Image (cartoon, rainbow, N blue to C red; front, side, top):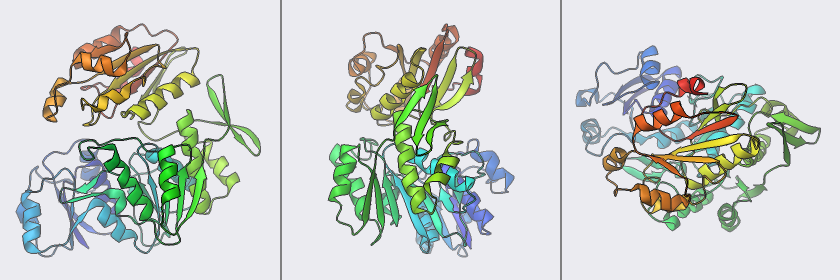
Length: 450
């Protein structure tokens, strides 16, 4: 099969290109910007475009399919050529569904936790030598790619993102998968540039719950009131299995999970991650892994990239980075770190980076999100606000939103880095939360700051 990728350099897109290449497909692609690690990984397999840009001549009549990434625009010249030629055009999730129509599709959805839960499930299956196809939104230890597709495997595990499918398909990605087994982890309003009201955002999860195949299974977090309401109201003919946070204790900075065999030390921590673990256990059991085997495997799970990832440690100090950016994620992550290290001073830094977090109305939801930290810092770039064509946000608006008198606010990347360099870390935990990089912060050098 011959497939062309429009916007091949994206995190998800390049992984799908690699997966199809490994499957024996003939792959070509274009993009106007390709960054690391996509650039090197594509080059290693001879898939890196010779030059950047869009080239309609690449759209030829012998193509079986074109896969369109979100980075492309509706007037992309390659897209227009493909439409004119009548070549089948797929969005990323559409093509994944086509690849998995004959498989049992397991889809993990939720505003938060979906990447971690998917990663936990994959870790357990890999540990127990159970082969499955998959797509996950973060790089995982022991896996070469974030997408793996075969003809042989019975199951495919998909992280179900609620963001839009492509520039010409405005449906949320997880509406296209039609799961046999689905999980909803939690709901907190996000992507306000696409879903301008809370009700509109919630509706996407209601549709997802109704999209489960007849006779399928819905696993849901009963501690989230909105999730519980949606699950209980769903009329799709499915079996429903609620889950909740398991019992656990914290001793000397180590989390002990209560199991039928007694307390078991695990590497991940925080109530939200223990809740994620409970959801992952349910899914693994539906995929043929019994409880004892799950516990044996999950003990060695250390997390997905950028999800409470340890990036530095000395005898007295420790640093984590986390993808948290929405108010509920920031609050859960900050509290988790403080509960894990109650005797250390917590310096919590948050970059407002996404469309939602830079929205003047949305930031009001951050009230109390950093209260668990002894020192709270917010960084944002006015240039990023301008690039996203959003209303200007002032430091005063941010201070009012967080309702914290001692909140430190930076708008310049160099000044923020100077703050980190000059900070006196002494028996401290540094927590860096962002879906960006604070204007170019080198996370690999955090160890030196400690």
